Image 1: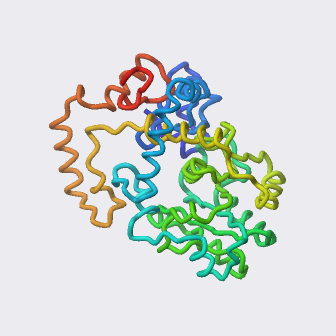
Image 2: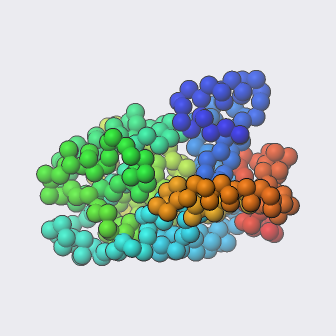
Length: 349
């Protein structure tokens, strides 16, 4: 198992292993991707192959779309338990207000008729090298250049959204700090206040911009077009805008008010990908301690965390563990990704 290639651009261990005809398994969150070719090593672990996507799209489309819709409603309603992803719990928590476009515009003194584009930021130091291409060298450079560009784009209002997990990384540079440095004096550029729920984006956004963030697949499923500044787990499937150069990227930003909402076919593809991304590839193990004991939780108790981990090991039965079943199938049957047995519709599971 290998995660090193997601954080180190050279990925020396992975490249050496692949050159010697070994198979590399790269873990990300609770999925695992199988690599057999060094040319694929920069591909994000969550990105399905075209074959994997087409299999679900052709065989399980209706069920996948339904399952994705159910999941996304739960996620954006703030009903996700912490073990399903701390980012979602922080972004869509019920303790934050969901604003209408009228309410948001009133807060910022904006005209309601004017379109709003949302810039969804990243944690600047988190796995910057996990994709094949970025228009800019890194996430921080991307946000700085984007802020400088949108200062001059006045036909839309711009909403800058920090990443929900940014505070846990304690970075020296933050999205809010970059905004204050570069665009706080612009009436048409504002940062989304911490007390406002990210689900408000559904009510206000004409379009959104990110490098490769999860928000791109979340909001594509609701028809909001997304401009990507890098390869994402959901890119290259026909429902995202993907400039391949700095010039193309800035041109898209300048014309973002003219970007059309996604059509029904594009939304359907986005939901199939969301099913694969959020449901089929994620496989949780009986060995994982409950996520309420996660260090991101302000009530984290390390002693209790390790006690629960020891208890899980003592009670472990491989035959009851979906992760064990999926990993065994991945090793023996050679699929690129783990497949959660609960979501193998085509196989009748």
